[in-house]
Length: 336
Image (cartoon, rainbow, N blue to C red; front, top):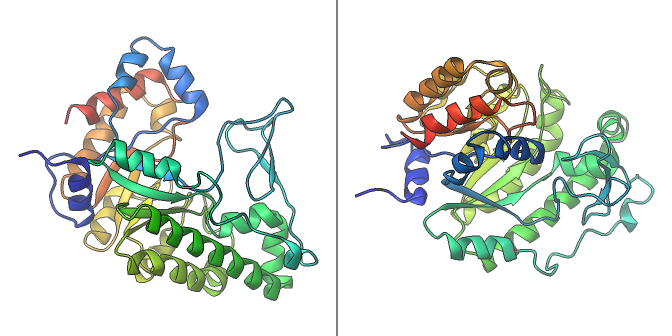
């Protein structure tokens, strides 16, 4: 008897052997358009049937902009997407002087959980995630500005602590409302890029002082509700893996092979921390050959059959990926 996607992912998260490795394939807007226009791309893309279904509950629509190239999210932050069509550059709006006056969005904003509820109803066989993009650190720098926030960690720590506490309070309130509205969700996914290609942006001591206790409080709410905790953090952040396990994280994404030894790390943390990602979007998919792509995917599939792994590109595929490599990757994953 075959497993549903939901059963398969839960088995993988329990670090049990799986009959096939669960998958999640995602494109950026540019990459999807390019792939669909390539020979056979439309037919191959139609075969993608991801095991994991994330549903955003905060309004952050990637690739959307007005006639001037700008987009304003529900927190009041305007993103300049003339330089980057997917995310863009944020114009900060919060300062130490106006923090008390700043108002977070309504917890019960109309249609906040509609996509999550619709996806749960339409695909009950899938593993469903309630997704917080820009959860704590990212929300703080989008509101304050990254350079400003990094300086505030040193020069204005009381302000940073207050800002982070209010973000966490908001997220917890939204999470509770979402779990009340959609109790069948399997996990909660928190997006927070802590790293660069060379290490933590703010450094380990600062992360542990300001972010770890607040993340523990937020993740703990999901754990207490019996949900799996997923986090996304780009960059070289493996120095945090033991901390993340300690505060309740079950699965780490995106598992970038350019900065993390995927096979050694999977072996080291098997039984404690699962991983999602692993296929190189900086080297193999844009610059490798078809044979190199197949070899990389085959190695990850062999690793993933031991459990503790969801195979996927390390990030939503960017516009420079080679369509023939995407096809090679999909052939290997879809024909396990």
